[in-house]
Image (cartoon, rainbow, N blue to C red; front, side):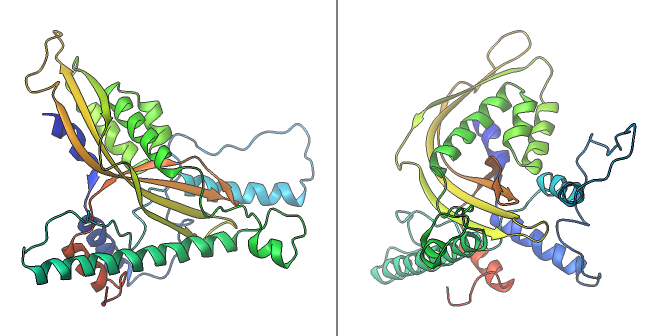
Length: 315
């Protein structure tokens, strides 16, 4: 029973890549649209209203630009972002290869090593590009300060592993307590909608208590870190991190009579790959939000990414 509580937040790469491929095929015949501006849904429950002023006043250029940019910013913040393209989550080295023959084992280790090195290098270049696209914090930077000085988009922000662990714990706790407001605050729109639907479908009167019994080995580790600059207002970017978390969790369920539901209350050992995302608008970083959980990239998904052009054929 405990597994049914955790599995709905696990998304497979094959579903993401297949969905992106189908979407591209459907939109191929349409005229090109400006991403993140025309095709985004407006924030629900927040209709735009013009404030009535007693006397008209001339607005400065800065206020006009801010008013024009605010609709784009609100649409970007409420946009249900997908997993970033070509996100590679490495399989654990200790995972058994298809064959126990020495040749197969060596080939498996070689492929894993090459893929990890190449994708890590690609991810580093993407973060580096976003870093140097952002302005320097120094008012009038010289050559060396512009090259080595601090910029608004950091190469390595605050501890992403700790952030992922905190969001992971807060998400499951809020789901058990039906805390929709916290879910909307810490989850991306797509995941928040999914969790709200699960809460609504829960039997009336049923109570849940989720507990994190402890973290296990292998210890929590950052396995993917990517960043992209996005079209739209200047300084719009997105950062994504995938953190492997091994933990023991327990879910206790009670019916409306207060009796324990059979099968609940048992500890479960889980290894999850938690994906978190952070938006930067005007080069100002927004809080991290949890996207969901993903699975290690399989050979099938690698083939799909190669076919779609997201990954080189030789990797």
